[in-house]
Image (tube, rainbow, N blue to C red; front, side, top):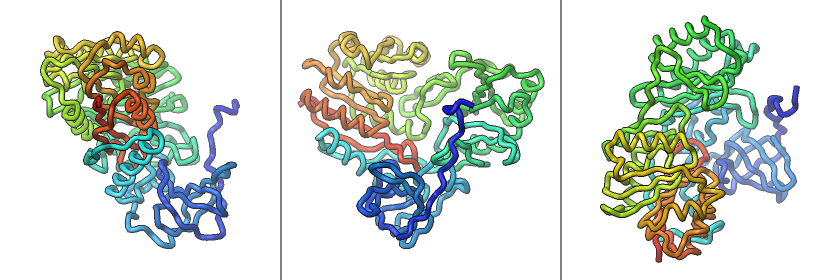
Length: 447
């Protein structure tokens, strides 16, 4: 077996002899302590606690440990809602009160803006929050047959391991998706290709549930019949993926109509493909888009660029305010989807979409954008360094930056401030409760 394909076993923990005091929280959701002066990240700990822990990894500059006993608990400590929480890598912070999670994430954002970007926000926005449980509408679930555990597992990976968690439900997944875990375990275990199904992409819209099954071997007629029967009983639609993303296709008789999500504040309904990028937390997206539009404050007739526009999540909302919107996106399929969404919404005259490389060819993209009154940026985790580092003197008066990585936002904020902008507003977006993931939104104004 190729070493790169071997499954990684969880490390064997070695109990530490002395209790430790947790000094603060790290960005990854662990507590921070020191052992004989050496930094140690302690999983399952909260700031201010005294705990016993076991060492799981040694590194040259720091160690990693996990809590084995809480001797003095933080007031923020709560009982995790998930039976698999101690093993599952899907969440890191269910043992911390949700309101405290939000406060810590806001503090992390402020710290990174100051330390990495050398900037401070003139005003802090109230956090954008939503339901703390059953919020996740989209997820990739691993699949693996493990005979010693009674068949097929479906779920997230264990912590510090490539093994799958033996789970039967999930309190962060939308309730309909959570309820499908056990039925899916049984279904896939009975397929002829059970050993060749590595993952499922699951989506719950307001109206339906979609399942995309990756399979590395052809399905038999009996497999297809079983999938169709499952769809009829569970009220779901199947899509099959025999190879790369371009091979995704519906399993008849489900039909090839696309799923949709709504932006109620703007009277919009957007289509997306089964594997297209959309926000996984639809409730937060319903709050995030109006917040971004209000911050950008587009006026009728103004020219606005929506960079990394995806399927048009922000573009169409901006166009309902009368702005003339140019959306740029690197993926051709998403550009086509955005155009179709604009046409469906009757906004094609106000919205245009083009494919552009916003990383390696930023100067050409900026030339294509031309003079704009405002920009909206919603980049991936790597951020928008090339664009923010090349903003022309005739750049927009206002920029709203929606970020899924506070470190790259901070870096790019420093670049924008160097180009004559000030950070007027900033705040977090609680897109992923109970995880260490931090999303945020910021408004930059030209000085």
